[in-house]
Length: 322
Length: 164
Length: 99
Image 1 (cartoon, rainbow over the protein chains, first blue to last red):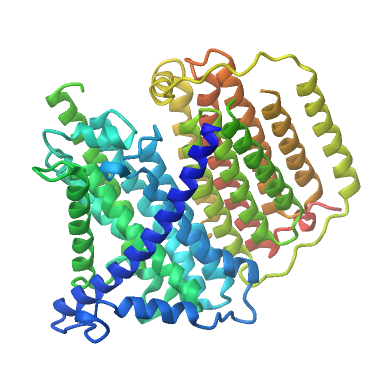
Image 2 (cartoon, helix red, strand yellow; image 1 turned 180 degrees about the vertical axis):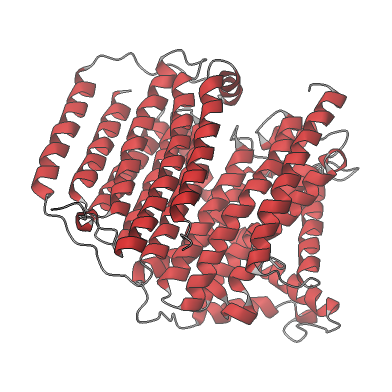
């Protein structure tokens, strides 16, 4: 009986997480528009609500009530599955992030691997969406995204392995606790750089957004989508962005440690700073070409991440076993 | 087993069996691969229930995030224009007889055998796994690296375009 | 224990059925993966029964997943090579050696 209660509680938490990510997406879209406007010397959304703060809410309402358009030659099953399989893993991956306070979940002994593994399912969604649309731009976008994801997954995983070596645990709560004196960004600066750049590629953001490069592919895998399904792609993108930023906070920035205020405050603050960093990069740098992107992954980041592993081993020797 | 574990085992088990069945029965290649993905995910859930949490995440990491994506990729490269169902087979009766025989034998054997009940699980499997891989299983562990390398080279050699 | 073994037997039979009846190379690969996973399920289940601290079954399951990755990579490369040559992935059409 108690088990079933726990089970129900988990389901309820899932629903809450889904709505939270929805709200977060709306907030992040607004933030992105404001940041981009500031960087490009514009003002951004201004009229809906105070300082245009309700603009994304209005957009969301518009998207939800829009007609659901499906290309007549699209594969109906795959076309519907695509956005779902893209959005759900992004939300699932949040389950192991130890935000602190009431959101400190210590369920999984392999949380770090879980976080690396679950977003991998996103690629299936992108491939399906691109293929089902029956459209060359979408198809190319889907293929590009999966090639990119698989290539960048390797250096990214190796960068995380270095952290796991130092922390001596795969449990996210232990990884956070292990960084008590110094956060790992000080011990593994190279690992942090590799993690951040490969993460940009994993969440398909500029300068690695070739799967949806507007100048070549219209909008990549979501060219044919509109209305609510398109909103799901947006939810996936910003949910993944938030999760990746939270994971960077957990692995390298000392998780929730900070003076005076509670853990959860510091954790969210650091995460938001990382999110802002990602947005800053997006609106500052140009886009790579597809072949440059692959060369970068295999000839630069893979060796760098291996060097980082050796460095981590040296650090382990220096500070002694934990 | 506790109540929730039993309920979840039944749910994942039925899900795994149904998606596996759909994967081998459907005539659309794409749906078959997606059903395989669902099957693998359901099986990862069962691994987790059996207290093999590391195997469960590795299953999702390698199978769902790697092999299924690879299969979709190969499908899309090999038949990007073809969206029709594949030819249905002519050996259905023979196949089902053999499958019923094999399945019936396995199920009969496992129902008849007397096995001790499931012992309590270890609290955390990861340290034991790490120790096993660096001690008793070190040789197979190194060997699989060599096999992976050989597979990568072989795959590259197979798909490389031949220069005239 | 028994329910796990029964499930594994059923899954294995489904895989056998797929390999025997489907003529498309990709679907056959899918069926082989289902069979391998049924075997993995048994390995994981018995790992808990026999010397749980040695983790023999689980290590074998993980090695098996690694082998499956190799198999899929080489198999799919073969399928692509065959497709280039014959423009089909249906194994019944690969009959160059027929007299």
